[in-house]
Length: 171
View (cartoon, rainbow, N blue to C red):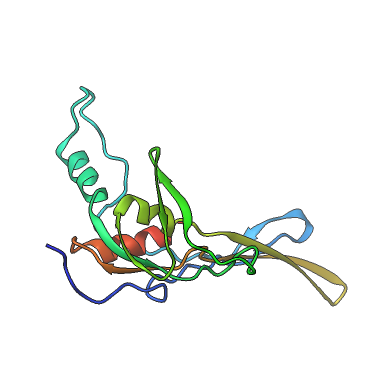
């Protein structure tokens, strides 16, 4: 049964921005980063029985990743040549299988492909030199963006929204 609730839009899945690095005099110091902890472990490596037989936890995780979600790929933020219309984006691949998605259309996609799309987060770096009182400071500002904004329209799992937020926060 598909749970029809509120859609998860790109605004609901905000990307965490990393604090700037101060590399003055070759010493890199990082300002404190905030880490959100979640009680339920997901996408963690699961210890196997070692006998080639998957544990119950492994089977549950595999089943969870095979759930079919309804999603809509929004228009990407950066497209190379805007003069040509884009019919589909991809391939998004997982374990040798690939899918292509048409922007703006609702499509049924397995969770494992949605994870690959959510993890597609380019990283941009900008260096800033601050001069003042005879000393220079060098700051490296790091920016994360979303290459393919995605709206999750329906998810059969009650823990789907928490899963999507965790995937976005992990990168």
